[in-house]
Length: 173
Image (cartoon, rainbow, N blue to C red; front, side, top):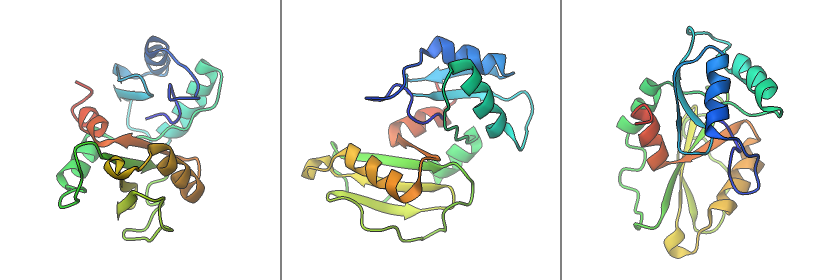
């Protein structure tokens, strides 16, 4: 997952260019998911420094620095099985979000963040993810949540809505 690709006011990258960049870096079975920096691929080999290699290679290929956060399909499936939003009241128009932290173990489970913006809630903090809800039904705004997360977590994170997480866990299909 790449931070800040094809969002409002962010850098534009075609999915064809993104796919080619991953293939040129050795990725196999590369699929882009939606048009916002989501890529599902088989790495050339499991490598502890895959994020570093992707970050450097993508900066060279795309011409600008990007924050890269990786999760395996198995890790995403585990997140889904944990039912992070179970029992959380949400209206149909409310948005469920998962913020993925770049460094594994960079948050303490149950850690308390400062109070979020009005009409947003942080519902769970795991070592590598933070789960939140924007209550659009009550006037909550996603940009307010994003600013809050940036201010409190820094730039080495990326956020996806729950539907995107489900799609990524399905291998992008």
